[in-house]
Length: 406
Image (cartoon, rainbow, N blue to C red; front, top):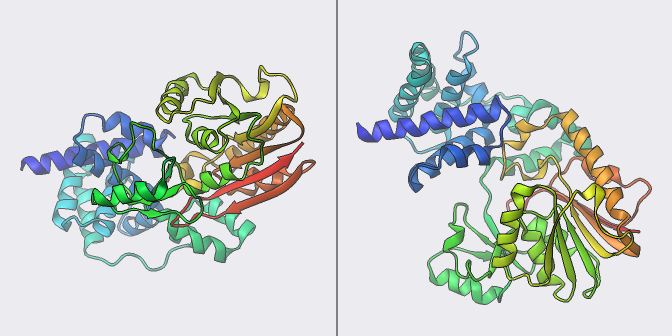
């Protein structure tokens, strides 16, 4: 019974985590760090699987158990039904265990709801998953988001990449030593890994790989960075001996790639959030970026001379719609109004940064979002030489970047 109590305790934490994300609009990674801090590695992994799995599959799960409800459940019961349904449909958990552990968990919050949770999950267990889902439910996207992407990209495009968002992504790193030799060392450790096709620095590894156990971590041999972000950094057109600004730099992965790509340049990593500066400094130090200096400043009011930068990389704050496979909570944290507000902020930062460029120098605007409002709709009155939007795939996130000349 001790194992059951332990398993139920993880589900209690999962109920709390989902409530904070879905009801209080808190970011999943922060919630999981806080609630899972006292767990061992196995239980922490289970907590992450339950919470992120439910967020990835939310709409089909809700359609699944809602068939058997007579009235809308309270928040805790709803979270328990989501967790139980996820285990029954997508995890190798025995049906009786999935049901009983969720029943034990709901007793902590609402003892009177235990009978309902038990009955509904037993019906889910005994039934097939519903085959008739609405398009947005099948895509596991909010209705407004599905409609927006369908109108912008076509229904076929959305149906093509939506399944990717429902699967945990591979770990991707940018390797700063010999990539082939590093790969040989990783394989010798018995870890699966393969070369990325979209960046000469990229190596892909299985989801859940322990980053700090990989060879050369403490020595700065690599940093975690998706191939799409690497492609954006590689798209910046700048001289190797000038001043390059990395705006909105934390946590510093793109800064490090800029440092290795432009070793003779002076790179100024600019970050507004004071809480993110220590991690930025730590990463820059570990990755041995000797040509980088760090500046805490607001991108809208940079304390630098106008027209003094030879190049700028602007990783603008965005809705993270391109990284839903990695951060599935993002689809619950933003609505259409929030995207429009972010687009306005991006526009202001973009025009402020352009003022820092020397004539004929380039700014690379990048966002991990595929919303047109955050992408090509910023192009009016700007001289864009190249731009690219890539949809999410199994090998990279969704991303957009544009090379802009002053």
